[in-house]
Length: 387
Image 1 (cartoon, rainbow, N blue to C red):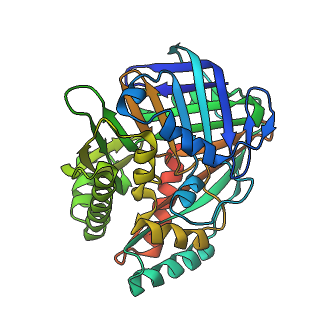
Image 2 (cartoon, rainbow, N blue to C red):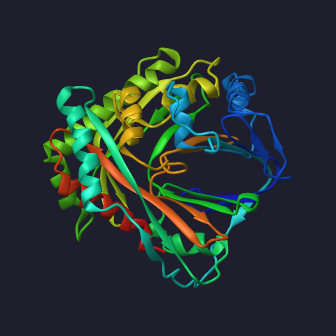
């Protein structure tokens, strides 16, 4: 078992876990022994409060990785969505950390598409969600669907990571992966987006988030594509709504008002240009990790507004669980306190040689179904083509 993170100037690999457990609604499994127990998700949430109950306790953590699955957000928002066997969180404490280098010259996985949403089914879900917009139930919803792929050749988990990240310009800021032999799973993300990142040093700690909205192909000159995003009323409306939602989420943590530091800035990622906002709040020393997670998760940019209503509606529009996709990966290690939003992320079943990859986008009253369908495929292709 291991986890790999891109640190901006190199990869770091965490290994030799001393503790690793996957939590479900009413039970959990020790990922080192395979033993099942009645320790459930409520126990995990309680420990986010008791073991990380202050900023000083968070500062003391080393080599600590947590994966929050999207369905955990349904519980935090008081919905009954997750089934008994849906994974909700994975918690890992590693003993070792060292630099990691890519494996060179890994051939293509030659992925074969075996499942995708049809344009008809997409339109049916789009139209149902749009009715909620017209009634004023919600103001924006993020509609996503899964794509399934198979590969034939034998590739190790590290080889798959190396293939995806082989070119530096193809690595996103929150790229990471975790391989779990007991589950036969590789969770691989090339995410450009953070749920939160904190600076816990200095006289007063701060926390910020960076919602992303609006997507176009990068083209020959990303600046020209960015001008189109800035001139789009639909894309600006999306970003403004989610910026306001996340400012509110940050404020809920400690009742310290969130401030918009940047609004509508360009984000250049592999083959795509986005726009984003940067929002910041201050933290009290008594702030717990659970308090932050409850306020922020799931990320507003992958749900919509208002969040609680949208998450309930999405469960009726989307027929399959999101799982790792649109969840969050938290890394706490010395001065590093960060959590991604797991977009551009694949769930690899290594035994079956099967990858599930979700994609989608935010929809408002100004959205056009055909354009949103094409944007979903653009995001999907930005990941799949690298493999």
